[in-house]
Length: 348
Image (cartoon, rainbow, N blue to C red; front, side, top):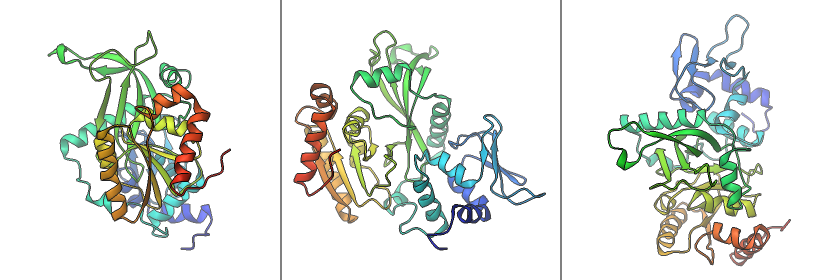
């Protein structure tokens, strides 16, 4: 298949492999007659979304409809929803990867070494998908207040807000868990499948972090995966950060870059790079733990032939610098660091 084939041709080719498509991108669904049924476009369990597997009665294979929302379309539309893509170019690249016509595999070789989740992990992943699907866009919510209070303006479909997320304190014992508002962030693998949901619990009276033990928690599987924010440019460079706010602070200063937030230093060192990436910038905290994680990731990247550079703040982390000096000053600092490591970029 030529890379120049039209979107209609790609859609038809995907429709010819509709069941394989569903099994890869919607593994939580199940086959019901001539349909694959799943909860929604995020891949959660359920039956609201039906995908036609074979042409029947004049209706095309690959057509789908979400009866809960009224959405419908072909498999190109569905793939874009599934990936959370911001550009059609990225979606078509993934479609070609699935069909075997991409210049690189849909899943990196390193990703194949990730252990398949056991039954317990699978249940947590399913719960994470359901939780994220229940969230709503962050604009105008307490989550937006929290991020804006930290100087962060880089948002995206990877973030949602829920006003009442279950919260269990250690001292609660056998009592039912309480509920609290939380910023939600979906953790995905390199195919765009949700493997977890990060919860940042918030204090509605201050707009800051909830005053509890461990206000940041992860449900599901994080190992090797990340929270992803795409610039829409289809770049071959990627910024991989140690924490969500740290990574979004860099993304606020450099909105043209794609981002992957690994949440902790440990998981920064375990990150599995997506295919087609040629260079990764490691945005870590300024401490020994961050340095060790950065070196571990660097060793992995170099073994895969991926170039890498370091972005290290003078203060504790990049959110400290964003709040202290502002977006423009942080941008200049980051661009200077990139230029010193051989990266040329036009400063807009």
